[in-house]
Structure formats: C-alpha cells, structure tokens
Image 1 (cartoon, rainbow, N blue to C red):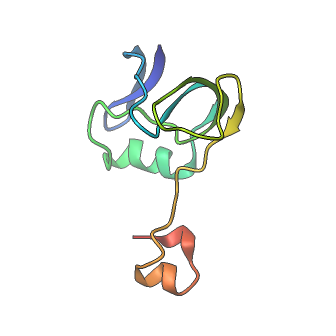
Image 2: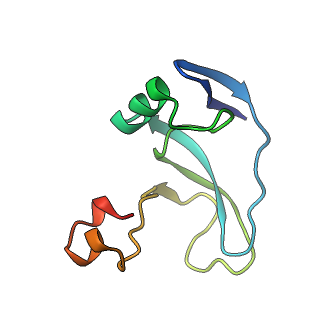
Length: 102
C-alpha cells in the first residue's frame, strides 16, 4: 500500500509499505481520506518524528479486515478514526483538557 513516510527534517515521501494484518481486537482500515494536520507539519519541519514513521493520523475509510475478538465491526463498515484516546489519569485529563493528554 502507499503511505506518506517521514524520512528526515523537511522530507516526506510516498512509499510502498506492507499491508498490516490485524491482531486480536484490531481492524485494518483501507484509508480513503487523510489529512496532514498542523502537528504533522511542525514535526516534519523540526524532526520530532523518527525517520520511517508513517504520518497522517486524521483519516477516514472502510474496514478491510477484522482481527480475532472484534465485535460490533464488520468488513465494509465506514469509519472515521480518533487516534487521540485520552488516558483520563494525567494532569490535563483530570482538568478536563483531554486534548492535552500526556
């Protein structure tokens, strides 16, 4: 599959990467739409990411595979992903600032 891969400060390339297989409790999503947000842009220009990281954590698509133990989701379901799941225990979370989760 194709992915945007951080290669170093100011360097992103579209590369072929292996299609992942879902583990227990996981699904594989065929991404239809993906955004590169401000934090991605900052990280690209400052080198906050490690080279080789696939970027673009704001996306939507269709479930392509379902791993063992997944309930309530089927192949073909359309999804929007929230990858920022707050812990609920750190200082910012306890103050109600879930977007600042440490």
